Length: 288
Length: 326
Image (cartoon, rainbow over all chains, first blue to last red; front, side, top):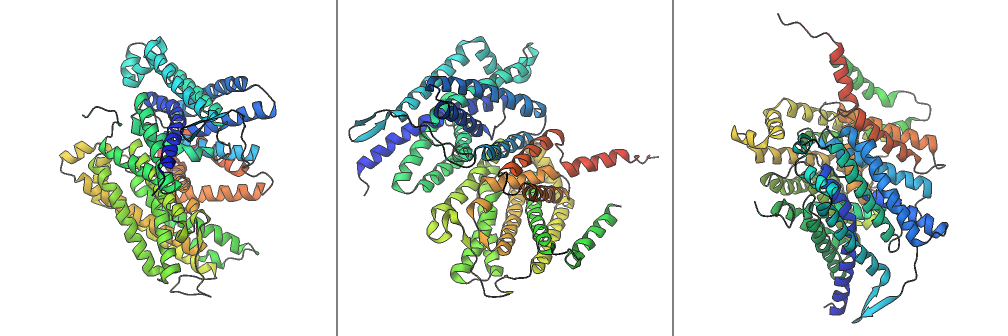
């Protein structure tokens, strides 16, 4: 029998991991919901942002906040570049080709990163205190990202529901033909959405570099899980993706302690497959 | 003209091992065997891919086929001829288990891609997790039979594998043509266009979808067995999971998935390109070869969405004057 304290610790770790997954899923889910394209290379963009923060903070000695801001701007630029260079020429072609073009980007980014920076693992270590609550360690380097990802979710929600551009994004997500009939330009909305999605990648990169070391294949570690969370939560459904992040992270974390890390992922993926059949519109979708 | 060209190509391929190649023979044969086996696997993928069932998890079928055969030989001494049959049956079973709910609940498009992707990852992770007998991420080598053996399907001479791979590739093309000319093709095309409409005119949607998925998966497993016997080593990262699944899809899309020769053209090009880049850059610039490969993939998908062979064929057809119907 496993000591309950281990399970409790695993559950807490699951919550902290869930915050990270939610952050990764937010930006991708926005793009997924609005442009209806899966950016297979999304987590690889996060990887690039992690490298940027690493070099700025660790190598050039920038303060963390400045590195973070630079990463946000870089992420937004990357998002716009990916949209204009890769997605927009093939918006009209088969969905397979769109999927594969971003898959090609994945190969490109992984190997270009290997070429530039080799496969060394790099990380930025901050010395922040760790708190102990009821025998469970809570390192601040993991609690702060968790808090920021919740703030980011709220900010994104407010942006989408309370601003003019946000309303336009939601309108395009609902019906892009109707939007162009109303005289709005979906192309412009796509660019804004990609920029916001990229910004989220920049934020995720900033927070992740303090907990995980970055290497060219970082995308493979979190990529598949991130798409699955988006689908599980429901396309473009921010709250659904948020809940799905925590379901997946708890499964991985608890099964990881009880069984093994790989089996944790296996169970999470099987749950994903079963859920697609049971609730194709996402976990929070109304039953049709 | 196409028939004559095809005949010449087959004769050329048949005599290739006899041609003098000044010490390069082993290497050329090695590359050719890889192209033939992966082209066969790509063809198997395109059987379902061309009908809109885009699987991103063919690594699952490839890995299951290869691992089952190798493990049965290593632990029980079961000949790969029998082990291969067991492996193909296992894979067909897995494909049916995945395909049934997918067609029952109408999981199509992105969703089908992501479900199959998850299946591919599940198989890879299971192989890694069961490391005590699968070797985990280190992979496992085929137990040597000690010399050439038909029972163990192990030969020192590459020419044996070359002809076996050639036969396999031709068999794959034959299956492709059979499916292309069958009723199933019309039915699958109708299903790919509009499932509900197809069902309304009496096409058994579920049966056809499961059938084509099982066929595609079983052939992929055969390819996996062939590859494992040739390389004599299996590894979860090269035979299961996302990486290999995407590579199969890329090669087919590059060549064109709607034409018989598409998967072969695409596979030959991707393997030739990566071999060329590997030799050109060697160990000096690690990663450069794949960087160029990834870049070319993006460019090709944007500018030649029908694939290289598909676009070429269209170009030739357009040039040729259309016969006037009196």
